[in-house]
Length: 194
Image 1 (cartoon, rainbow, N blue to C red):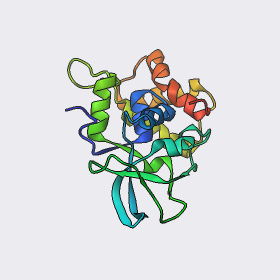
Image 2 (tube, one colour):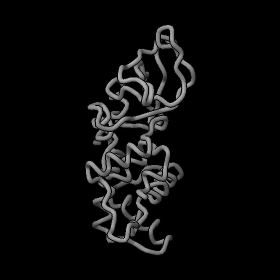
Image 3 (tube, rainbow, N blue to C red):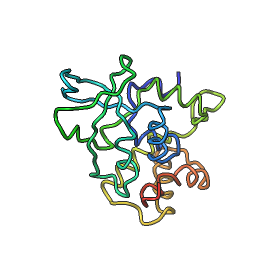
Image 4 (cartoon, rainbow, N blue to C red):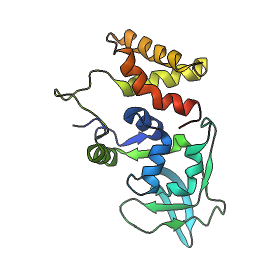
């Protein structure tokens, strides 16, 4: 089983780390309807009709959220949604009038959609034995936690050292050039160059 299939939802930031891409790349794929992005919402009105639960978001409407230099507390108002598997037409949120406030941490990709997209795009290289040698996804969690605790690294080299230190604590360390290649998109995001 693909590890994407074992998760019901994959947060956007985790998907970017996993695929070695920027969140702007994910937004672009979603805005062109190649990859649906979802979130859970409390009841809102779309005209006379209430809508709640897990919905697809109109990523093109909140594209600026993915392009901002800092993503920590950034947000945008979402005005269009679509029911999962029921509608192909976008519904406009009429109440609340401003829409729903969204942060990146609110957004996810459904596991089955991520698995389909990975297969179509060849985004995840699985080794012949079926398991990845290094757990890049779990390492990304470690980096996010360290960044929250210690602040952002001062350089890309420091970010790579943090990753290599995390792997050393787990017992097996990838080579530095592989870590640098995998972390370049994250470093660009931290610098606002995503």
